[in-house]
View 1 (cartoon, rainbow, N blue to C red):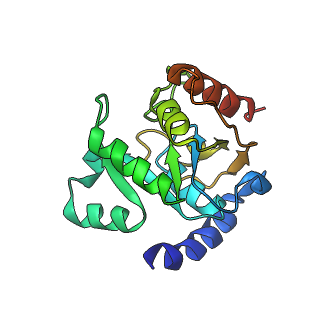
View 2 (cartoon, rainbow, N blue to C red):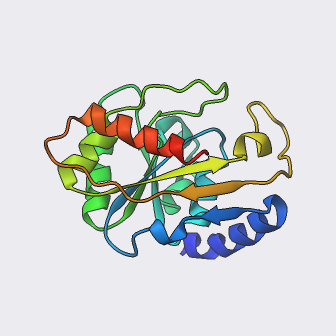
Length: 194
């Protein structure tokens, strides 16, 4: 209920304040589970994805965000669940699989954390594991402008244009190596930047 209540407010604010433009919305599957894979350059990125995607989203979020019980409850109600970064967090993987099997949409940032310097990290192979193991497609998406709207260490949000580009879904065979899937997904995300 909270998600449904907050979404129209967020849509209105992002269109008004950031002149949000969304491209490729037709590439979003209308039903069934899939992974929405995005670049990550700002704390605003999950909100922008929620505003832009017609389907309700689920987020694998770093466990540090769940340390405050009030904020933890809030983001849990919005579809987030914790993951321990830089480790094989089996409980997070099981929860991700459970949601995808139920036909939900899972947001993943293949590089694992926000990038501010333009340097690209090697993507985590977990996205390859989930896509191949569950036979779910991946929809790549590239977000422009959130790094200017809320840069690293900024105290205030800047009112600058934000745009978002969804790409065509990608399906992978079960025999494809997980790191290769992750590499292809990251390549497709970056292609949407041009």
